[in-house]
Length: 257
Image 1 (cartoon, rainbow, N blue to C red):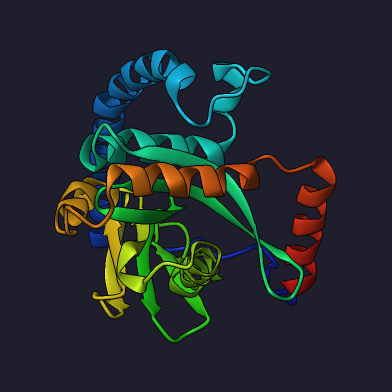
Image 2 (tube, rainbow, N blue to C red):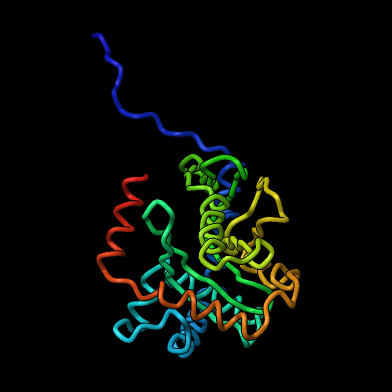
């Protein structure tokens, strides 16, 4: 009697070394969760008291709904970290919609105006390994491979070009020198900056844990108190935009992509 080959899938043989690595990663993962979960809970409870005094506060948005917006909550965490190093006299602005020469607008998420200058923040709350070059249009995020699947690779727009355009439009609006405006690109503590090639004199790239050292390296007396107030009053009207303008900005970004 003729036997036909079975069409069942072959079982995947996993070596003992891969299995040991998988178990090691799992132990580290759940061990970190056991430590980080209580700390994250306490951090959120503390954040609920600070939220009302932050520049992200809105009367129609309570804290429980606010933490579900990942982008804005990441900016809130960045503000909590940076406000300890920029000084008490710093003025903060969020969601600036600045007009460009071509008639469109650019959105700046977070700006600090302090004695060290105008700090333009770009928050990238990514995990994994980050690869990028100053001249390449896209950067790469590599998430480590698991025993059951391969490593995952994602792309995102070059943050140096993105924040560089924000700084350029900001300089044109304020008519100030390049030394007074600083581009600050901040990644989350979960990532590792593996191969990032850029000019450190024009751009500062770091993880959130290294932000204090980067801010303290800036000159202290770039702006006076009167200049801080003048710049703040000049930029504040660009935070009050209509819903129509916001939708037009989003549509332009989608068309560009």
